[in-house]
Length: 186
Ligand SMILES: Nc1nc2c(ncn2[C@@H]2O[C@H](COP(=O)(O)OP(=O)(O)O)[C@@H](O)[C@H]2O)c(=O)[nH]1
Ligand SMILES: [Mg+2]
Image (cartoon, rainbow, N blue to C red; front, side, top):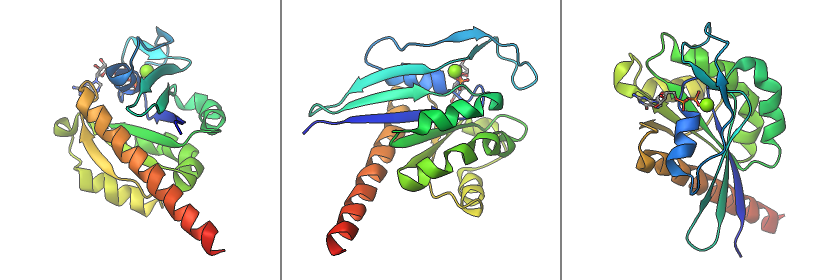
């Protein structure tokens, strides 16, 4: 039976959420870019004020529905609302920022429940430009109680985004299998 996966892309402004969805969406993604009035958070000219939305049809009939979250932390109420019915979240980080982990901490906790119940992966962009390595991210996540695989990615590359999606779908499947095992034991 074919099924639909609602997946979220989250992370601070400029981490690459809009770019990632555009890289894999089958049709032109729907995006709601507006002039960035939040220069204090990031200097880029355009920013996403609503959602990005894209779709991917998988072999076998399954479909991905991809939602890019607005990055600014004043939108954190939207992150919670959007988590309803979602099966996983791709958390993107920008390693070239002065303190990428502080940026991440502003939004990752909003997705703790989604990550615990379903799945989360972390994609670190601009990996070569920052001081932190992938292991630093892994340790930081573990210290905050998050269990998530971390990948170095350039979300402008379709294959890198598909790697994140693959890891996420594997995690969802594994969790569902484990849940099924527990239920049948009960
Ligand atoms: N060098 C580099 N640039 C990137 C990477 N990811 C995104 N960008 C660029 O960073 C800018 C901001 O990305 P955007 O998708 O708007 O970020 P968003 O705020 O998370 O939606 C765009 O111009 C992207 O092309 C990356 O991994 N490496
Ligand atoms: Mg965006």
